[in-house]
Length: 335
Ligand code: HSE
Image (tube, rainbow, N blue to C red; front, side, top):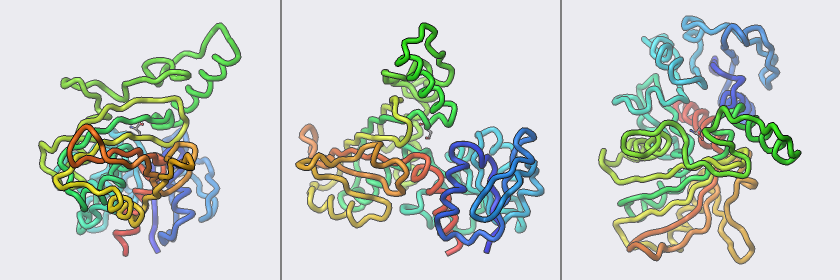
């Protein structure tokens, strides 16, 4: 069994990592939780016993075999390499974007490219939106050969962590109760209740946001596609609390066949085909929340482009898009 450390275990993703470790079979011998001075000393009740949060230090994190970092990119940049350095360093699975685009650092969706972790001690966990979409794209890419992709996303407030959820809930309550002082928006650029905001993360020079460009950069790296492979995304924040939704148009090299595509998706681990429109069955955040599998549905031949499929994907971004992905990376590394 392994000594497992988590940094950021009280945040939105960190909590889910503890929950996934409790439910799955990764052999946790001893669980250690590291935090800031503010959280050190708190006790977290887990299946592995009561764990007292320890003040983070690189040397104590190095005592673990595997360390999950569920913290911001600046923290990861500062500490990740020191935690995994040398033969006695820990394997680090980092949920931030700090190392995702660095050459030589594997960026991993385990169902796609877990082979890239061999001999590596620092592994980058992907952006949640990208990880969810690729669960559906990958089996179709293997069948028909992806040529181009356009994605439009509908992302839940919890993508911005607990403060994002709180802002949505408080704002919604204050609108519904007709309060004159409507709760201020600090996390999102505009009030999110009863609104959609086509803006997630910072705008880049090319007019895309960083969240949108992450889908482009990470799809290329994870799927082993060329550096100029055409992937375009519009990422939109919507007032749901959890699970990100994505409408995807995928254009392929080969002629597409919907029946073959359905079969490949049905057989693909981590995917649940929810696609029976005659019974009003399609993917939705309400049904995908709390699930490990990504729901895929509304699968059809796109009528605007040749060799193209269009479909709708919903996945719990905190689980499949983050915590579960990280834990399955660890599971595959010890297999
Ligand atoms: N960047 C994502 C978002 C976070 O803001 O929705 C992952 O959930």
